[in-house]
Image (cartoon, rainbow, N blue to C red; front, side):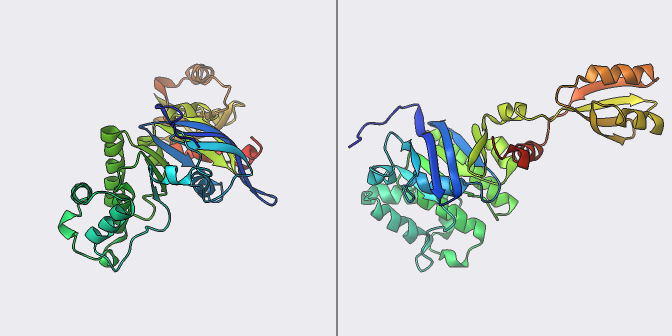
Length: 319
């Protein structure tokens, strides 16, 4: 039996992991290492294999091939070792609506065999952090979805897990509730060294909060790295050109250039998408030669949603 953590610096290690359901390749040859004390985001369209990956890591599904370790333990042969060290939030919150908020956390603390004094300390700590302490005697059945989600996160954290596996933790929440949960996750990672593995459809959330991201499509990885490095893997080549004397004729001339994919004008501003291997200096020289007074040129920071869409287009299916 495995009894030693694989590495203090690696919380989750996945090697060539696959899970097939007949002809359906739900997860197809995924490999990655997730450092301890970081927030990791698994992104992909619906049906990409995100939830299946989490269920594999929990040991709820057996892989067709490949391996995985959480904190050095195999989730299929050492399930109890894994479950005692992780917190989980899936689509179901796992809350008992006939118990109060305080009683819910007390129940899960007992399940995890926490001593009474430590359990009570932890309940107060978590309900205070999630701004629910004043409502601890209430039943979550009467609460908003955002409040129930915060309590569910506290439930997953009650036993001080080293790893959190969260399946779309902020989906369907209002802006304030979603921000509160994201900030809380960032806080426990920084303060307690917790490793967070989450899935999300929110590109802003992923880019702002995740240290590393993997994008999957049809069960296969199409990109992996920091948000910034993933940007560099796309072919988006967008520029902002500001200048004077940009009339309709100039706009049409730019639009007809072979290296220009698209161009849009807003008064004295042109937003130009070039082919991946094109250099903006060629277009700038052309504009100057045509009498345009070029005041400034700068690359545009692409919306991460556009980066995600490019990575998950049909042309990437076989990557």
